Length: 469
Ligand code: F6R
Image (cartoon, protein in one colour):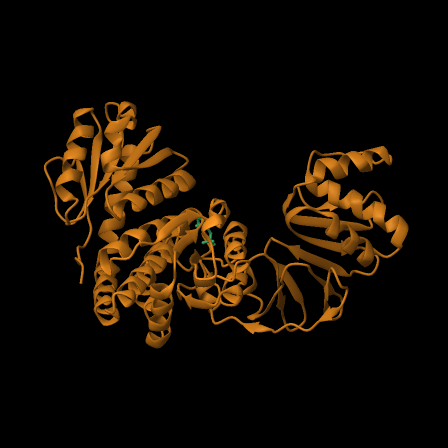
């Protein structure tokens, strides 16, 4: 649906975001005689700029005025046909400027820029960039010109290409052969300092969205078991509801691949407004979350291009576990365990596994529903597995805590319904097996994901067991 053109086609606009007050603005513009061809909020921005242009007679000023009138989280790019100037503004949605040898490129993520340049400026909220022969950045509120640091991406162009893989997600899954080992290459002193902050904090909250949120939930189990420490969990969008408990000694542990997720940034703002501290685990160097954190650790996973997060997730988990060990004063033990895990994962990701999984997928692909169960730290992993299946296969998938299934959802199990049982070799094993037998007796097709086979499984996916240090 983009771009949208002005009525005289003198400028065109693309938008990333949502204009929350678009109905109100649209109503006002209609009374001024504007007609609309679409139901989109994007068209409202274009008409608003046209209206403001009548007063300012200057496109840049009209864009500034209009953008400041928008509520919500938005980034826009406007191109002026007459002088070929491009304007881009940000408030809440990510926007970055790639600086090439002979060109400038705007994007919402660094990955697509890599092919062209590694020199990037991350724009902040309320900033407007003007691109002609050169670039200029202004603050949208004060109109002051701003000098911003140009960051150099450390990623390689090859990392952002598919190579021989059929698609990026497969490539990124296979990259876990290296990414786990890379995630734990960190400055030990920094990790230990962060652990000190976590231990001193009064109320630690692990916050992320979607998959990163599941990592945070898994983190609560890791901290409980390894560091005997209670940390709270909330999804980014839910966290502001807990602002009543936030104070200057609160600490937010933020997890985000992109480092730009708006709900996560809002959670940070909630804590920072009360002078609390923020520690973040991010993948994109120089991203907003990284820049706004008191401490930040890079997960070193390289560009994650597939929509579904895979390698970044396991790297985030590895670092969360390492932090838990550091909080327990056992950083070296954690490091050794994770190194061993990385080796085991490398062995696991072989061609045979891929072939087996393809066959299994053929068997279950026409089912409408799929359920995943897990206990302990495998409960968030069951939720996470469900997200992956939903967004990649479009099959209705849901994750449950093993013990919760009997409290209602078991009614959904039919003859042949595929159910994944994530069974670790730990104290949850026996209970998980009981839960698995319960759903099998309802006719479920059991796919056991476990270090050991079991007669209750109809299909077994073997995973390594590194235990706990
Ligand atoms: C799912 C997925 C999303 C992201 C979420 C947060 O596979 O990728 O759920 O995890 O949008 O994104 P980041 O980690 O960039 O903050």
